[in-house]
Length: 63
Image 1 (cartoon, helix red, strand yellow):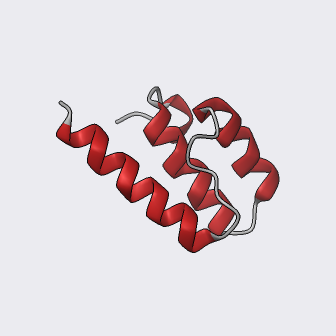
Image 2: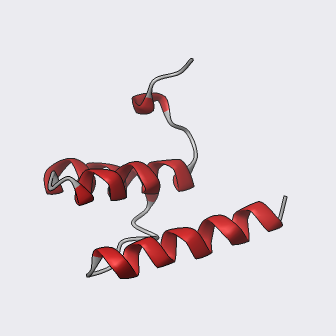
Image 3: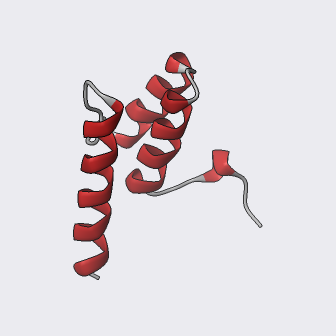
């Protein structure tokens, strides 16, 4: 099994960032958002979660 630090997709990095943000580790969240291209970052956690879900659904449906 791989480690979370070995994530390779932008979507996985964005989820990782969101989880760090939820736990209050902004600096770590920002690191992962930078790696993910900050595509999903939103001002509120609720808006961010919504953007993540929408993005993941779009990605999943295009495969």
